[in-house]
Length: 573
Image 1: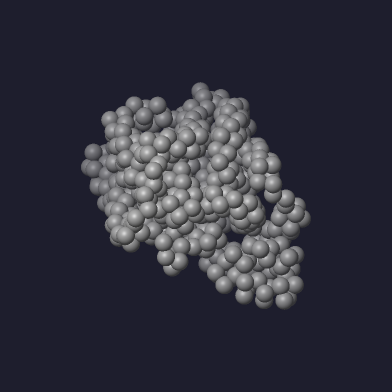
Image 2 (image 1 turned 45 degrees about the horizontal axis):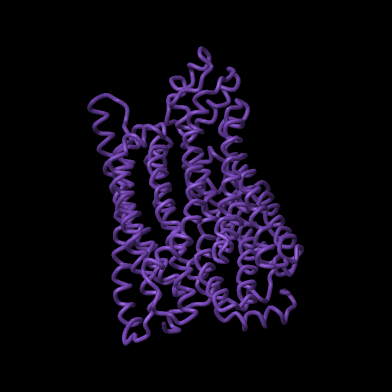
């Protein structure tokens, strides 16, 4: 493989992080207008359908692509190119078969899955996204291969294709179908149905995944001609042996993903069921009425029966869940998806280092990834805590879930740490440890959800509380395992205290500017300005407190030159 295509750990991570940021911006351009178009009820239908797909997606694709990346990285480190080709062929057959079976399950089981999730109107959306599972499995095979080659560009480009098609086609379909639904409702004198418009948005997601997979197929066809040209070295490893190795690596990772995804599905169903079963006092009912800021529902029709039955109706449960899943959770998940890019680059880097017994390089990559995760997650948590309302208003034009996002803010740190430490443990060959930890955390979350959400004083706010406690426990267990297995020693002051102090100063600055700075610009422009100033404040105090490490800086493109300049001014250790 040419050096022009190959990147070191940090360069590959940077490519994926930047592409992920662009993808998230494109995703926001899709999600924000979609929330305005579909409102809470439509977003509840959309998210319910997507969650079913996401569960099967995680089960189908989480383990094998990581196994492919790990085995290809080890093979290339040992210069076994033919072995890498066999790994790809076996994984292609396995993932293709799994994807095809999963698509059939989604398509024909859509009505039953929707009913089990508590929303029959999600069935059409589940059917619309069924073909995507087959193509995302194929795409995952190609991505795993390229990542094992430590070439992150194909993954980045394919993600951009997927996001752009989702934006252009998905929103367009939702818009025109929503317009038709409103016209039909006006003629019939009935309420507007969000089922078909939500399914239209999901068709755009499916189309994006199909085109992304086709791009990766073409890229591999072009790349493989160069990689395998004139290949003379044979590899005696049997295909059956490779399949067994892939499965042994993939199964524990897949089980861990199953635990996480099934917990998410149970979480979704439990929130809806527990909300519908709460007995409220008239005062609590009134407080819930005040949450309805969108005018989507006739409040007396939805909440008026509280005074008689004191029971939360299905429509109110849908509104609260839509507000939580469509707004608070959407923003909360953004930091962790960026860190996933770091994990994709980390697995082949650590695997290849271990394959050639370079323990020091493996430790360096793991240590740097954890520090970078904290440097990124801490300011995100501080911003959500200090500016949840303005950020929601800026991005989603709806701050009804402000308190939910503020409660979720600390979990940004815990979730990102779980993500990166899971990648480290998988790359080092200890795939069962994250599974065990995720299972413990998942059980804890289900129990806490049942207790917290069923409390009328907490109701929907019990969901983010349980998320914090669940991921805090998993993060602590994962970090302990990484420290013990990898033999990594952290400087507590430099790794956590200094970045946390910089993030805390940034958070206080955001809070103060929002409350005491005169409103001299439009709300959204002023929020952007304040967040920009906050980011500058965070960067300045990172330097003043010497919270960054020279080891991490040097892994960036032109990192040695940057490191020398920063070291000259004594702002890095």
